Amino acid sequence: MDHQEPTTGFRFYPTEEELVSFYLLNKLESKRQGSIRRVIPDLDIYSTEPWDLPRYAEELCRGDTEQWFFFTPRQQREAQGGRPNRTTASGYWKATGSPGYVYSSDNRVIGVKKTMVFYKGKAPKGRKTKWKMNEYRAIEGVAAAPSAATTSNSATTTTTNPKLRNEFRLCRVYIVSGSSRAFDRRPLEASGDTSHRQSDNLLGASTSSSHQATMVEEKTSSSSDTHGSNSGDLADLQASETTD
Image (tube, rainbow, N blue to C red; front, side, top):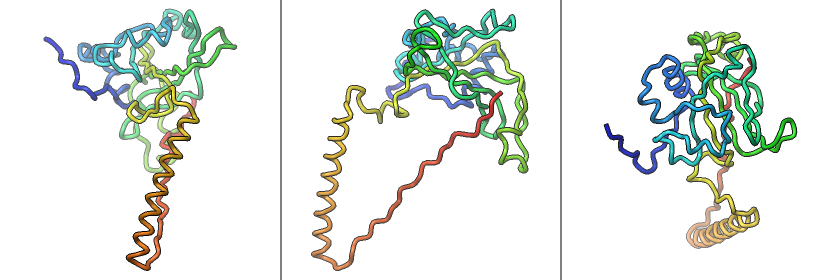
């Protein structure tokens, strides 16, 4: 059956819960393989340079310029009890921060996430690049949701030393851009001076408009202006993560 191209503007943009509970678990259980292969291929990404990875993306993600998804199988050395080799011909992937749990919408632990950065050159003196990766692994079974008494400390009480499934990992590869999506991203070649000039121009226009509005209001009313300060703080939604 022929597959139609997605309409312009549509993206494959799953949540972490969907990546683990649907795509990774179905991959591990050999279910829904046809639909999954349309978005996430199998690839040994640790032997491939990160800038070459987009060409291996599947049909529904091939045109994406921001992120790419891959299943990578367990290496032979891992099966024999060794550590995975994350070294390519030009550099290496290095873990950053501590691994964290992936939670379902009902607060169950369903997987573990590790974040890595690609460095060019030889360890430990490589040069850090903007290429990053989130590596997801599923756990055996699903941990029970915490009780009301332990909700405030769910990061440490939800599960203890979960057993990980290692047949496949799901990897999300992306480039650090400084903003969440392309539609609100400034051109990469824009300099800081240019950005400041644009901000100054916008500020000047705003000040001029505000001054004109104040003059009109003073002619029609003797009441003074009041300006509320509604600067809402964006909450840091990162959950407290614990190490393995």
